[in-house]
Image (cartoon, rainbow, N blue to C red; front, top):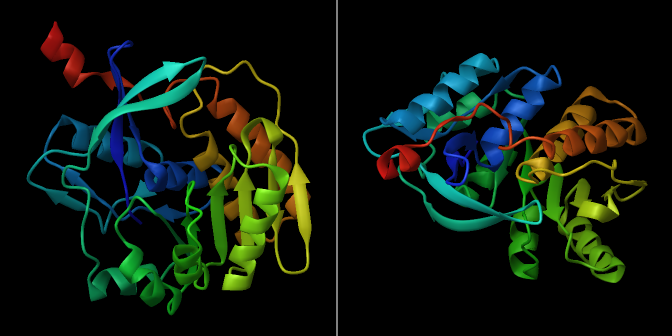
Length: 267
């Protein structure tokens, strides 16, 4: 529930559907989960690409919105295989949840959202109806984490730039805020998953990296699937590391590249 966009790769002349929540929805569906996606897309070719991708990946868009206007996009560059964000526009992707949306969410085992989605004011209401997963990305602000973390079944963080002590502090903060599980992905340092009683870690799977975009989202989706299914954490963490590494071997978070609108204008 939340953000979607189209990632534009000018050097390739291609665009790919993406955004944290869209990527997590698709990657969760690829693990075998039954998944719905609630978000807003525009009436342009990028919106068509997002909806077609969801359909092909067996992710329901029954509650999604199609709004007159442009879909969200992000211009992507690369430096040594790592993605660099050059420009972006949220388009029509921001929306307000209705009572019907909350009721729709209640039909699901868990709802995932993220800090860039603009849905923070609804997280408490969602948590009253079902389990909540929230991706804080690189946010480390204590007040914000405590406000959202108390509602989280799974709180996820990107911690590739943090040292061991900083990771420990972040995990402790999220757990004491009320999060049941805390996941910190750490790039080349692997990932850790903790609850108040258990602690797990996994090393990264070596791979020749082409594009890191979406790897963290893949990891989160696989962990969510494992927690919901009741799989042993060490098993689904290994699978998450393998799937995240595979994501790094292709452009775009979930593939489905299409000719770039920007490229078409230039040529």
